[in-house]
Length: 79
Image 1 (cartoon, one colour):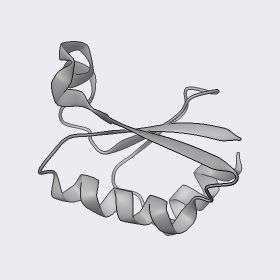
Image 2: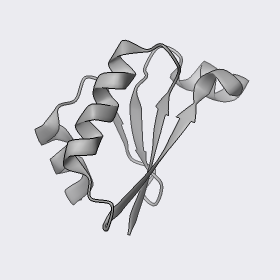
Image 3: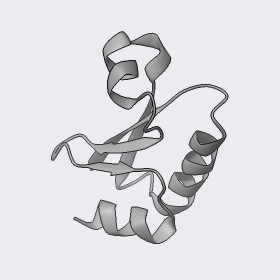
Image 4: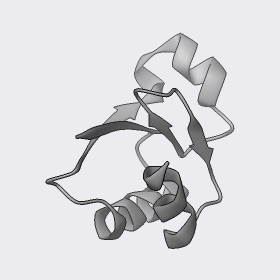
């Protein structure tokens, strides 16, 4: 199983769009995604505050930054 973290925050329109893309592109049998609210952590806020949403591959630490679409997510999770 591949594990990902989606760095996000409440009331973020782009984050809502990103979550919708992930729902259509990731399989619950093959992928897990934890949504991490950056507003609860000063270090995450400093790192991702102006870049969210960001999808992190937990194993490789590779990041997929916004803007991304279905194809970009597909390519990112295939690596």
